[in-house]
Image (tube, rainbow, N blue to C red; front, side, top):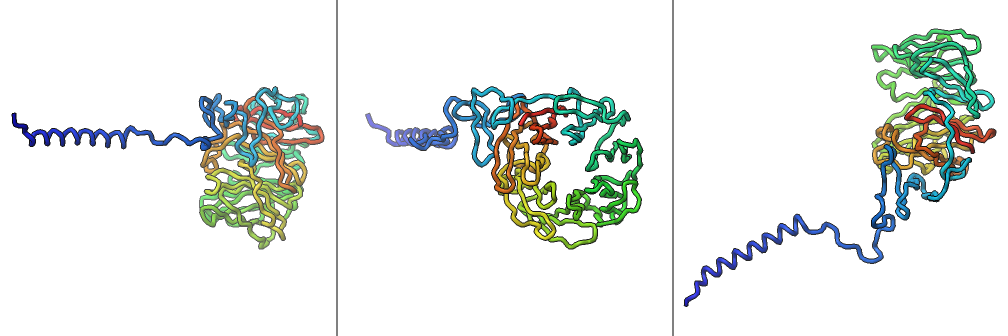
Length: 416
């Protein structure tokens, strides 16, 4: 029997082609993408069979401890602080899970400190202002009813306030005398002077050439134009300094990761500008006005907000500028004295959070105390109950901290 080597060769080539084709399919589509980890190279932050690095609980995002599988870490500190999993909420702020007392049962807006450690707030349900004590006692601040107030700007002594309405109407109300003054509808972004004798504001108009940053007397008389803001009103922040020398700041982007901050005075002063490492500058004066805590975001921080401190006296603007090492916005902070600040810090922030701060509305906060002289920061409390914090008020003499929850607008208290 003669073998047909030609046919055998064709069959062999066919089988080889099938095997080679199958190998290519396996290699490009089905082989494992990562090789097994060599001993000693395991990821020490993850344990097999436990929860992932983050977890969403009732709409709140937490970091998960790889050793216990529980959401107990804060990823926002330079040194991550463990909170014992067996810990029950403590009655006072001691660095771990802390008891929270709810002080109001209805929405409580535009809160501010008042005499003897009390807090003023507006109840949108009945249109009245109330005063609440740390023990939960609530009294009317004033019997007058103000329906549908959309914004409140308090005077320094809390006796007066600018009340803004959705239709653009603006009034100044004196809570001690009951007198009311009407301000022009095209005025907005109000701020009282440190002496409560003047107000600063922006003035809008259809023509950009008639848009101004200005100050006036409380009744709107004797307006003084400080700057023509044209179509750049959003770059100006009305923020009167406690030392009475500066009325506003102007932010101008230098490049993707830097901004120049200019300070606007009452007399056309040529103040030194401050160069900051990021965008979305949000500044807060210290009580004496010699320094400023601010937040910015940049690509070096994955576009997340970062807290900074800088000197801000006219002759020292920008000096001693340094990062405080916390990822949060400055408007989630409050001063207690000139060298200490308390900040609500999200437990975790995704990349790009600085571009849209609403991302943090569903993230629980922890509370840090920061010594501005040394830069030391201490985690003092993880509020029990998953709170997104804003408008914090601290009274260290009476040993309590009060805050409003961003999601339900109710007021809560923590004992220090």
